[in-house]
Length: 155
Image (cartoon, rainbow, N blue to C red; front, side, top):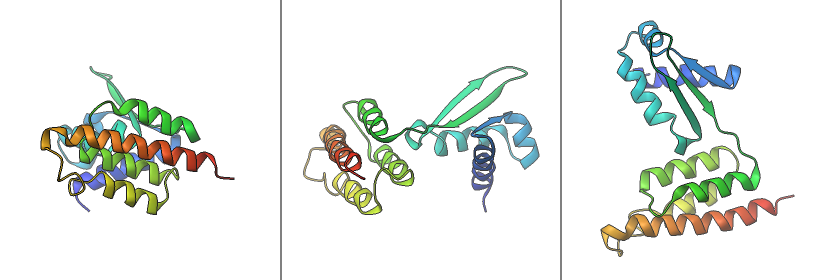
């Protein structure tokens, strides 16, 4: 397991134990044997809002980084995501949102695969590059509205 995976696993274990993880970056880096910037990298790449996390930080001597998993229920998850997307959406962020929805049971594996296929660069190849992120955002939002209706109709 590489250092980034080790850091991510430690943070995930903290989240499972207490619902949130409060980290002193320098202390964690020293205990693992890495540089503090490696901690920053892992948090930025694996614990982003798109992946369902809220990250707060306080700088200074007693500073910390607090990570919390966002837990939304039903329609609120879809509607918050739809409202947060905006007018443009890159493929990586789209993948992260889709993965998060599937991991939390809001989308089936099949629905997630279809959503990823519909918003992929390959699917949007016929659209001029400068408009693809706008098209992806529109497609993603409409797919989420449809998924929300299906999710809401579950017994």
